[in-house]
Length: 480
Image (cartoon, rainbow, N blue to C red; front, top):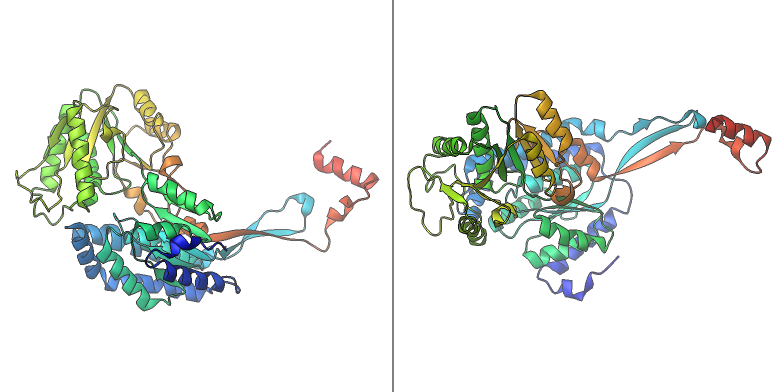
């Protein structure tokens, strides 16, 4: 195996990380993976860990963010991860069974099947926005598939990372599950380890670097990235219902969600109505902001300043900026809370229409026809998610057929990610590969094809030296 160079070893924590990896790797080369009972027990441990420590996790995340809604942590992190783990546990016995595949009549009476085997040692790189769900879901899938796992959490959520490391160390041997804490340099060294599979969730830009690093070892990767996910309201769909669901999806975690609606495509002539509905519904769901326990802060000053810069850039280029601050509160400088902000009159020259927003800003783009809306989406990089609001089945089917995105929710937002039996993943710049449910188990498994030859095999008729019988057989199997 590659040593990754002396430079990597100089990074604090890199030597221990490599030592643990080497032990894990060696143990995955000694024989078959863990039995079903051991895998089920691992899933049970993860579920108990999350449920027994849910309040501690909520507090750690609150401290990491400055303020993180407890209810959002319980719903979008704890519940989502536990639900996924329960689904895996319920179905794992069926997933690990070999699956029969048909054999062509030419090779009868042979048999064929698919066997699922552990890949070996898996690396999971976790982002800061949902550091529990986006760690425990792939971790659970990798363990269900029988692997050993190393997890690298984000340095932007140090309290949550530390708590995760301590708790996992209390229920797993270091050679089965190990959490690597550290900064960006250690994350880069982590991505250069010769894993049997590397799973990364984060930005498209960082994903490119991860893929380059993994390529040196020919490590297969799953990249869960982001991009600009559109929400489209069809002419005739009730605006109040659409805007409410967009507000809820957009303001979850203060917009710091990879599948948050990134911009809104709305019928021309309805912009004023949408603006009024946006202001009214934000005030209904978030009547205050500064001390509101339900409204999260931006994770860091760097991200806060970036979002403020997007607003300033859009305003300077002609956008109409509507900040919705229902109680007209002042925000302490260190609160890092940004009011829900609607941006109308936007254009492609604005940074807010070029970059993934990852905050509570919603640009609006008007369209004249559904053709125009579909064209607008298709002229841009493939999004991670798409949201379409319409009660016309023909239009719904058309949007589904004529656009490509990682996933879709019709007449709501973000909920497709909560479906345990739907695969989740991007396409093109928004990612590659899938996980959740069986697709997660399959991602972390070697899908091994096996062919069982029969002692009565007729293929011997096609052995050389070729003659009359071979020519007759070839006529039969080719049909001429």
